[in-house]
Image 1 (cartoon, rainbow, N blue to C red):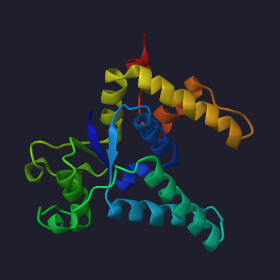
Image 2: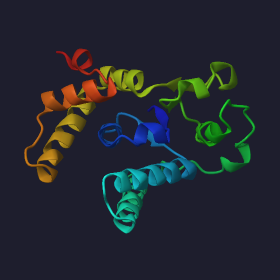
Image 3: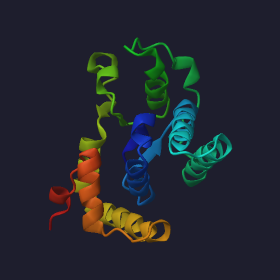
Image 4: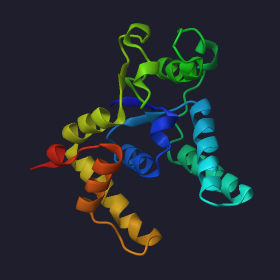
Length: 190
């Protein structure tokens, strides 16, 4: 199974995160992250909450709860021992070193990130691909359409519990396409 490091930038948009993690729950791939990635997710979620007019305590509580839920849902996702490798790759953005270090330590197949320019091919071990979320999801969806449909169905069913009206799977596919350029129609076509 594909082992994929999910950079914080692909875990920050809520629906994209939900879709990626739902694919992982369905066994389409194995997620990997470092404690530093989860720290970034928590910080960004906290800031998102504050910008959405939550008070500081509520924003912080929700952000922490999200990270705890991720850790509980995927207890084997944490890459261990990456810290000694951080800073050894010469990436253009030193703040991204922990992502590559986690990928190397976890023997990941791919790093999924929106910051492709910060992971130049010449500095990445050949055993690790670096993909934006769109081609990564396309690969997962075409190789495992049943898991993809199950993930979409679960998200659609959960949406009715948190909103005035549930979203249908076709609407969800449209939203993923329009918001995140994740195109699933072709991959899921019969």
